[in-house]
Image 1 (tube, rainbow, N blue to C red):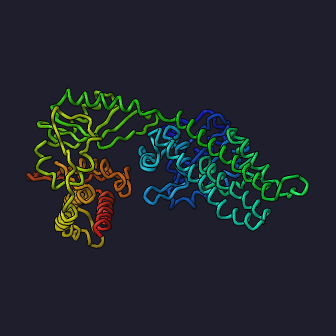
Image 2 (cartoon, rainbow, N blue to C red):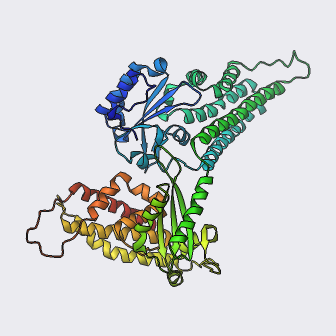
Image 3 (cartoon, rainbow, N blue to C red):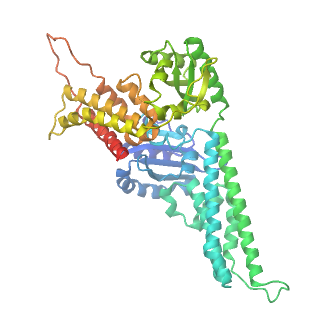
Length: 530
């Protein structure tokens, strides 16, 4: 991502706008700044992102400057101040706006290397077909709301022969379409600045794809219901109204279709298709089979890794069944894959033996039935049959409750060591935090998936947690803080006598953050168990 402090600003931004961005970054707590040049338009969009708790203060400082700059009228540059919260799903960005305008390649300032990932990676879809399908479903939902509104508010008035009132009610359903466009083209933080008339002017100036449609809607809304049935043979007030209603529905049907076309074209240009992903996956399987003795490979999940220059880097989460490969070789395997594919492929692996499968199918029933299934098979050794019949989940709940009770027996006494007021963390506390975090992640893995890995290092467990339970991981863990926490927990313990012992500087803030994470995970487990 570009470093704004080095003045790597887009050249097509005017000096006034560049100065505004520079001053805003230097004097305020901005997290991200996006610069999005709109395709087939002279419009340029600047989306400033701040922490929600600082939002009001930043608006207070910057809004007057934005109003004075008047960048939209002078320079065709739309500036907005926004917030986006991950855990509470509280955001100024509709998914369609985020998908089109907040790509990582549009970031011109970030206050942390992983800030985009921490805020947006779980909201930004990297699968082209899923992104298009998501919007089409949303568009269809809005279209259904239009028909529902007509049924509820318009049809009863027609039945009462209140045609003028029905005509006014009919015109109101166009608001659903305007809301759809606003969600896609503007952040929610500035919706209130654009009434229907002002938004129509904005569309006409910057989005020619929609200008004819909004013009037709504006002309229709200017008209009143006029009963001409007496002067036109064969016409009735209802037939005249029906013509108006059919015209409105025809406009809206075309409008929703056009919005889908617009969105699809933008996504087509933005995301690569999945053929490259499938090719890389085949090549990965061939590489692993050539490098290791493997009985089976299962694909658990796939993730396209976001970086500013490309969408073609993939992370594959795999289950490897091997007679000779051990989990302790995991990091070496990961590095070999990265080197072979020159960074285009990353892997995270669960590694087990056939004996492990046979021994644990009754303990890990949910895991077997979710992941060790035919549709996930990438490779299966000749004549090998695994989990042909799904394991019966007879006593899974009892096993989960028992396992959590066992974890609590470890965790509860450890937590008491942190209840002292004005606590100063020492090296012993770090060891306790490490043990608590391990037990909590294991508890969550077994509670949600009935799975326990073959290695318990905090770094591996954290990767496993992210791979198998991404929703809970992202709810509880800030990806920016995770490396600080793992670094703290990797502090070595001295077992040998030191002739000249050095005083250890314990990172008190990192300890507090780790304890906070443990409390979040504990609460998540308690909610699940209750």
